[in-house]
Length: 397
Ligand code: PLP
Image (cartoon, rainbow, N blue to C red; front, side, top):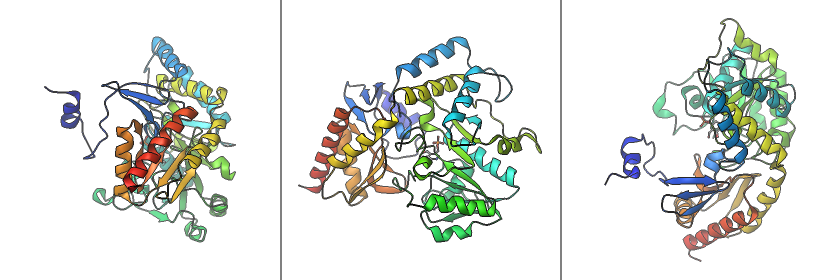
């Protein structure tokens, strides 16, 4: 008999030889149920997406309402579409000061591409600087920024004039010069394994960018919308970027991304050439309606204030000697285990016991813990007990 799993492996393009291959039929809050009725606690939120949980009723309602009014009408930026303009207005209130103009796209990588183009166009410079172990997406431009050779080498030639510095290396910031159009950085590095900036590093970076008239771009795609315990991770360091890039958690489960900047910077995309960035589906009204509802939920349900106690619970519950550290901030945490094989085995056993966790692209000896921000405390306790048990089993004690 041909099962959906067969088709998944046969006809759905795979880029991994070991996909999780769970067949989920329903997801709600922080749990997912598979085709056999088995329930899983989701500790990874579809990789940083379901910050307000799966199928939040406010998002579901907003999507249904918008579908009843209109779906796609026209390519980006031509018609006045109320979900888009209302979202742009609301984002101006939550973005760091002075960032008041948003360009909507469909994904994180696409938002990064837009931000790279905007920086080059606005400054008239070509060089871009990013960091080792940075992940900004998988399209050609975003891949060029990636700070890891293994995943890049097969796809060269990539974009020229990109330099990589070491994250948290303040001395290296002198490599940023008057040639540099922009520096792009994750205010907490996600795929590096939840690496937090050292005290003062982002401030020193801001200072160097000011001195060289270089634009500072914060990639808040994984860290944004409450993930690290503040609305945006850059708030921890009190540093304001020139351009902010968002996606993932923004849409409450629907696909949307954006790059945003002060209006005078964004205006560079209007001339020489006109239509400096074009998208058909960017800012899709249904996705904007979902994002608006998600924003409301984050603020009215005060989900971000609950992040600290959840982080605390994880840090106090996971205390096995095989854990060398728990790195990260808020609910973007990496539990560091002895090696990749150990981590893989723990992940496998957790999934068997109904707890979904994962590794990081550039840190395969760590366990990813990034649940919905409103995961219930008892669910989190239950999940931590399962992880703790799995670690004990794999460690043999
Ligand atoms: N930037 C960061 C920090 C990310 O974590 C990701 C995705 O994991 C991206 C960019 C790319 O986003 P997308 O997968 O939506 O293209």
